Length: 359
Ligand code: GN1
Ligand code: MG
Image (tube, rainbow, N blue to C red; front, side, top):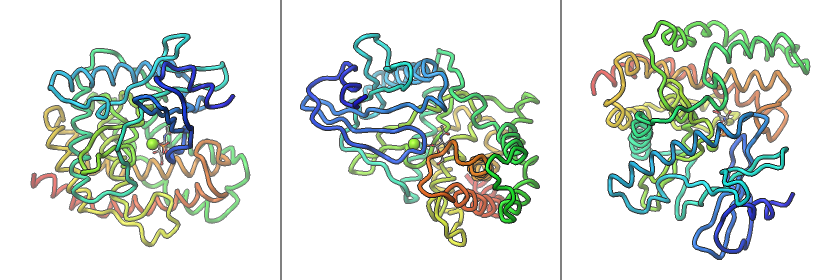
């Protein structure tokens, strides 16, 4: 079906002038819908193979955005449609998604004059830290119960099991390659240590909170002056450990190169970004963080490159069924990059601990 017909199924204002592809997510397909009305919109095809329960997904997003909107209104903020996403109901059903039983789509208001970046300066990282900490704080008293849109999404024990399963099945014969075996051998010794969060959780020492779970640097919108506007890409909003948001931001922002840069020798973990982000994050998150959570932030900075390496690697072994790829070895290149980042972060753990203690 044509994107235009689908966009017209939603209660949008004005006539559609143009629909063009937007952004570079690895999961959903996004389009910008330009209209002659007051707003433009983002039309997204939700990847239903990955998000099995679209009803739950949109329920989570609606509860969270309504809650944040309320808080912004209470605080007397203006220009609220640029500070929190607004989803448009479908004309026929009133739901914030449309489906033909096969594909799933949704529409949100396009945030005007806003920018996303693939890399950030320390100054921007500081504001991102403040914003993600505030985002978690705003959701800390969410009255609604949110479900896990991808069950056990950031559960390292599950991700490790999925890798072992992929290796066992070896669906497309990639385990025959010595370099693939070498990557596996390099990952395994750290597995147990990286599963620490799940152990702490089982021991009742670590809480789950509503987290964003995809705090890649490009999921934060800035205005032209560099002020933070809004956190976007809310599909993975769910109960998780705070390590998710802290770790995933640094995984993308503190890497000296992009997550799929083949030049692994250029990968490094930027402590200037770590320090700025951590300072901002702790300023707004200290109101709810427990000592165990704070203490383990350096672990989180290592866990996320590790988990991402495991996920990219398992997908490579499975024959590239999950992440969009641009060339055949893309997932292997991503894996090597994330392994290098993991080791770079690991080397900085003492410095990270010292920095947190100094705050
Ligand atoms: C996916 O689609 P995107 O780029 O926002 C993935 C994240 C990974 C990321 C790796 C639902 O996010 O978990 O960290 O790719 N999202 C899902 O770049 O799996
Ligand atoms: Mg994204």
